[in-house]
Structures are given as structure tokens and as C-alpha cells.
Amino acid sequence: MGSKSLYRSRLFRGGAASAGVLGALAGAEALRRVGAAVAWPAHGDDLRDEDFALLERDPVRWVLTEDDVILSARVIGSENPDATVVFVHGFCNTMGSFHFQRRDLAGQWGPRVRMVFFDQRGHGDSGIPAGDSCTVAQLGRDLVRVIEECAPTGPVVLVGHSMGGMAILAAAAQFPELFESRVLGTALLSTAAAEVARAGAAQLLSSPAIDGFRMAVHTSPALVQAGRVSARRLITPVLHVSSFHGEVSPTLSRFTTSMIDRTPVETIVKFLKALELHDESASLPALAPRPALVVGGGRDLIIPFRNSRKLAQCLPDADLIRVTDAAHMVHLQYPDLVNLALERLLARVGVLDGEVSYG
Image 1: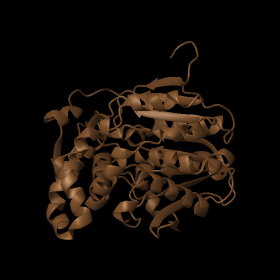
Image 2: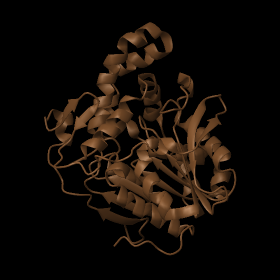
Image 3: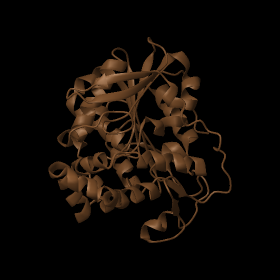
């Protein structure tokens, strides 16, 4: 890092490593599929009774985008908070991927902080978009529409996981005045500013079969129907096996793989090209003046930790956290660590009183 450190780095070990689990990508048999579930090594299930439908019971708001796609959003908290935290989920996920943040932080933060969650276009309960609108730039514009409708005034903190982090960067590129006037800080979890197509398992998402299916999406509905199963068999196993590392609650595993499997295959294929072309590096100066949090998993095959390190190097006031045993879904497998880091971010931007210690 040289004599002048560009970022503060913290390292968390998220639990005991379990050798060979993610080696399934190379043919190991430590992971087996049962329907929509992935059976990860587990000696128990402490989440057997977890209510993963919690967000579904929160008040819903419908946000209409500039191209008439309806986005499903949930708003928790006061109409006049000190700040609003907006959570933006990743590729093939839904707002439900922030279940533990919704469960734990709403009570900890209280009425001073409003929380906004939403399903990105083509995901969850939101509308299915046209293929040419499935771009990272459009996701940035969607995020701004959600802010306009669900948090029209007051300070904002943005939290993005994977493709959600890319949406935040895209919004910063297109709306720098919003970031200058209202955004207090950002949290970027398991994400990258660029070079996604050359990172880790993302390389496996580019193949002649996927390219052919992508063309069929635009040209022949009949071929789309015929190729749907083949395309899903190529794509979703990569996303399944890259979600976690080590021992995982079977209930959490089923919840996560079900969320991935419910994503329409057309949505998956439409966004693959956008992710390959994604480069929002030019937007980083808009984030640089504010405190930031960058979190990456040491076992993440989709967005390797080196991408997180590059992000932090461009954000002078960033906390960089490496969760050594985490894969891509770091906020689901190690929510206590992520929640603690988010609390520290809110303390640093002045929303919460005092510093939060990492212990």
C-alpha cells in the first residue's frame, strides 16, 4: 500500500474452512443437488425455524421506471428519518437476500433510520423488461427512481451487493449531483467496478450455448422455450456453487438456491451481456469524497477479492473488509459481520452516535 495507505483494511475469518466444497466447479463431489436445494456440509441447522418471508409482509410500494417497468419496493421505518438506507440486491437474487439486514438492523437502528428494499427489474416481484433495457446504466436509473419515490428528501446511504453495487456505481456516473448533495456514504459488497467477465467463475457464464440462447431471446420465442432448460442447466449450477463456502444451514441453502432458481431464464441471459460489458470505473470519483465500506469474500469465485481491493484503492475513505471464508453471498452467510460493518459506516457518516468497534 506504500507509505500513504489508500484504505483501511480489516480481515475477518468467517468460520472454519471446509476444504473441497467450491472445488465442485472442477468436478469434486462434495456438493450434491436435490431439486432446487444444494446440500452443503452441515452438522446442524440453526436456521430451521427462520422466517425468510419477513420482508414479504412489509408495506409494498410500486415504483414506475422511465420505461414503464414496475418495481416492487418495501419501505420500513419513519416518514421523517435522519437518513434512509437503500439496499440493492445482486444478479439472480431478490430483496430477500438482505433478510438478515432487515431482521436485525431495523430494530437496532430504530426510527432514526428508514430502510428501503426493492427487486431489480426482471427479478422477484418486479416487472419483466425488454431485452435492450437490461443494462447496468438502466439499473442505475432505476435506483434513482426508487430513491425519488421512497426517499424523496433527506440523506441517503446506499448498500449494494454484486450487480446491486454496479447499479450504485452506474447511478453515480449519471447523477453525480445526487451523490454530492444527498448520499452520505456507500457500501459495496462482493462487487466490482469493471472486468467482471474476466473474474473467477464469471468466465463460465460465457459460452457458445449461452450466446446462442441470448440471440434466441431476441429473435425466436419458440427457440427460447425449447432452450430454456438447457440454458438454466448451464447457468444456475455456477451461481449455486459460488454462493457459499464451508458449512451452511440447509434451510439457508434452500432459501438461496430457490431464489436463484425462481429468476426467469430470460432475465438471466439478458443481463449476462450487460455484466460482461460493465465498466463504471469513471464513476468512482463521485463516491470518493464520502466514507465507504467495501466487503469481499476470500472464497468468492464470482467476484474475487482482488476486485474489492481495486475498489477500495479508488476510495480514499473506505474500510476494506476481507471475510476469509466467505464466498459470494457474504451478507447471507456472515450477516453479523456485515451488519456490524454497516453500523460502523452509519456511525462514520454521522447517522449513528459514536464509533462501532470491530472488537
